[in-house]
Length: 494
Ligand code: GLC
Image (tube, rainbow, N blue to C red; front, side, top):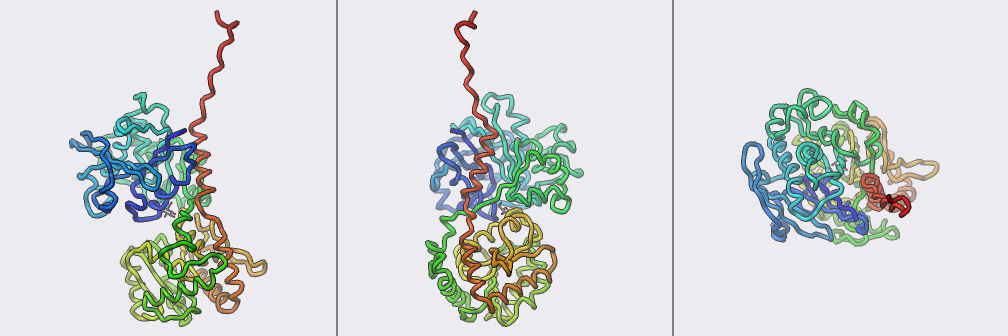
């Protein structure tokens, strides 16, 4: 049995701002329990829902010097759905209404977190063979392990993995501030370590010191070796290409299951999908005060409303998208310019456009069930989870061919009647619009072909099963079994 510790800044169901939380909350459940004891360590944010924090049990506490202050550190734990979670408690760092604040404060907060992840290990009775770090917030774990813990017998031989969920976020600030906050010496702030274009960079530290690097799709693993997607680290990614691999994310097929989903008005499977989706469409129209019409072509967008998600393309051609025979449902929050865009169109066409500027897990499930097309034309997309959710619910994704979108959605081919969605190559609003009009035409004029594709989409398997095996292979390659030493034969003994 090998021990693995996940280190992350968010995790479903405790705290979520993006797809990272879904991955941390589901992947550990799918790793073979006979071979690996996977546990997860998170900050105990003050904003965690009380229904979870009230279940946590005290493990231990200590005081530590960090960033010129003496700090209390508490360790709590709880079991949730068969997974053991640890929480690091510090009201000084993890107070506040939201996990993230501004980068300046966040860097100190997550440097503290990363250091305490290591400091607490000898006290909690769990020695990981592998520490699996996720995104920049845990980037200093491999660095601190190298810097201050390696001399200690307890830590010797612990391996680290750095998984990139989004290379855009790196945790950078000027070198002297980061040096001061982290307590790391000058030695670390050279271009082959944490220094990056004059700044200090926490993710880069993790990438340099980790024993293996992964990212969340094979295409993204290739893309980040190019300047356009590399966010300044493409050179490092090329240099590390031998240690870098892409492992596609999955989704939790028990939670995202139209056959059992309690949020839906009508449950359905591949045999009942077409009537089932129609019933869910009418129910959603009722709920959102849209015109009730089971036959109208309904487009869904569920997304963080940021430029990464290709919303500039949508804005550019939104009038052409919103023809009389289309309904649009939007769910998510983000940049004001995009929130305003959808709110404006909803105010102009209230019976056809519904703009929901908040996030609701339940409503998201009902949108996945009700829509015909899911629009996700991202500029870049490390993996993307919502296209996987929409496939599971038989809503055909329209995506740009980048990152995980390219690896999971295959464009409809007319002659052979294959594919599970629609895609286009260039970041160009009209290319997207033409594919959208093609999809709409297929829906209105060749419904049989469209419906066959709905079933094909639902039959795709993007559960965690295959990907969890790939992580297990990676864990095994980092922790080879020691061969038992051959006993000396009696004749060899002197
Ligand atoms: C980030 C990426 C997204 C990915 C998710 C989980 O949110 O932007 O593409 O699916 O992390 O890995």
